[in-house]
Image (cartoon, rainbow, N blue to C red):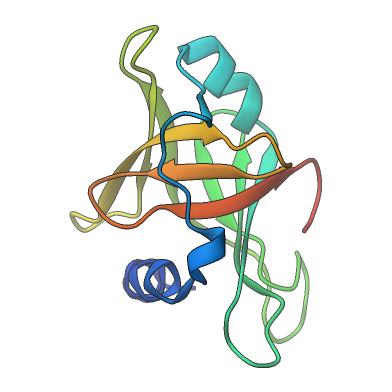
Length: 141
């Protein structure tokens, strides 16, 4: 996806999530509050956000490569129609107790999130906008 599409999709996807999938980004969820914990959670892993669009399984699959490279997996490397592509960078910031992840898609499109473990195999990415609920996996979604 292009960065502009990602930003638009992010807002639409979050707005379309069913009420049952929306959490409060607070207790009883547990915040991933240390920089080391957030780095371990994301580095080398794929954040998988389910789609609400008919026929789509995933809204997006963003691979958090070590070294801060952010890749949209799409249909995978080498796919003839929809190959993976680098879409920006990711970085862990803040201090222990207040760790955040920032996704930078270039052109002024940067998003900073706190991350919460929902205790059910999902994590919530929270900012001023509606939260994004995702699974985090090694490999593809």
